[in-house]
Length: 384
Figure 1 (tube, rainbow, N blue to C red):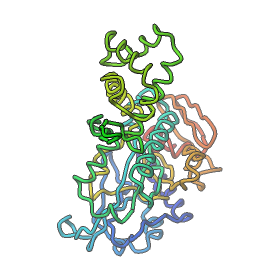
Figure 2: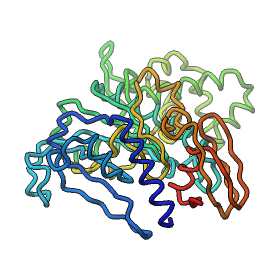
Figure 3: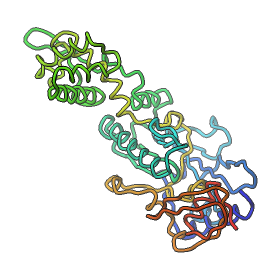
Figure 4: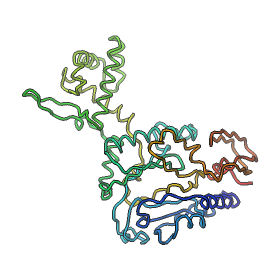
């Protein structure tokens, strides 16, 4: 990024902050603050170990300094401006999840468009929220578009504040379905003087595996024998002999399967559940960034600040408005709409923002300002 581009972005970021108000986290004065200024060269400099007292009024600070990126700590401290973690006096930390399209197994960043990456990340976000809200039952949950390639989820329920890194890693492992073991999803129940092993269908991964099992059995019911066997052998670990055994067990034990009974019809039902479990894990886990969640001192982007790698707003999203939220429209900064800027690019570019698609060939162009800011912030254009 050359000096003219850097100075232009710094000035326009300042204009945004002079017209906007950021969203402070609870207990803002107990958190560490950090920011990255518009430093010359290819590297970046993180300024951290600051308290809100050091910054003063945060809106005034941002308008004055117009930083490239702004962060606050998930943790709360007795002395957030202390220069070492041991001196800060850790008092607890929010539980933070980060979803980044670059980490999604279904996305190839070299092939997918920015819009496609964000759409895939939103699908993963819905899966993550199912864990956060349904499986864990957290109430104090906020969702934020990161301004870049994904979403942040902040959990501030009192009971998670004191969790250490190991406890948070257990939450990560659950969300990622690490080493998902069907044995752990089964409980033993007594009925009529006998015991049987059944899936925990009331919630969690047990409910997910059971739902997949019932749906699979329903699909088999509509197929002839040859097609049903072919469907079964398509699952890893099931050969022709096992497929025939499973098909016979399924046909004779539909009600038992619906009740989650893993012993009906011999080992076939359990074998099928084991085989489907990994499919369920791959389809319904949420590929969160583990270090973000396990780090009890993590800095995270400040909502309503600007992302220095895109020029988009780090946007808090009302839970009820999530389905309708379009980051390529709703995160475009209002001060950057309506104007234009002259830029130079050396490669063809395609930008989908604010409901329009802009296609550019190498050379000099006058474009809508939000498009120009987006390309310049990403290092894909220079200011003329």
